[in-house]
Image (tube, rainbow over all chains, first blue to last red; front, side, top):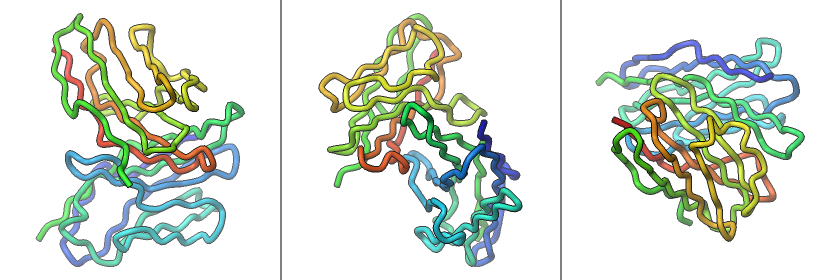
Length: 116
Length: 114
């Protein structure tokens, strides 16, 4: 069975400082991994996706994540936070079931606050 | 290209009433998924359509929930009768038939049962 643990429910940073949102996962197979972001009153937006190619994945808005199999981690980083980055971030693991469905397992979310 | 849309954005109903949520996937996407986030919990899978067929409804909580996707386009999720524990945010997602990996989500419907 797959699972996702987001180690921080809330993270607060100052504008212009680095962002680190932590995610650990467990999966029976080689999973696909995603980060989604949800801004207030908006849908879940795909930030980036890992599918066993390069271990360092670049996403939108300057975010990137590094897949570390030995640590079963997929932490999300950004060198310099912007006020518009304030949102809730979800780490997601995807496994392919025998039904052909991609089973998405979500982490509990990390709410990022950016202080001016 | 229009994204996944959901209607209504918010719904407040009394316990025992019926509510129908609608999802319009991205045009041409064969796969349509429903998820739910109950307050304070993780987002959980409810069911999966491939075109008009239910591929997997293992996440549906009970028989008060009925999902349909007539014609393989938009989908509805009906809750009848609604209970207090049904409150939460209901998300719809879709993905193309050729790549079921990446799912594109709608803004969600916030359901409050009083």
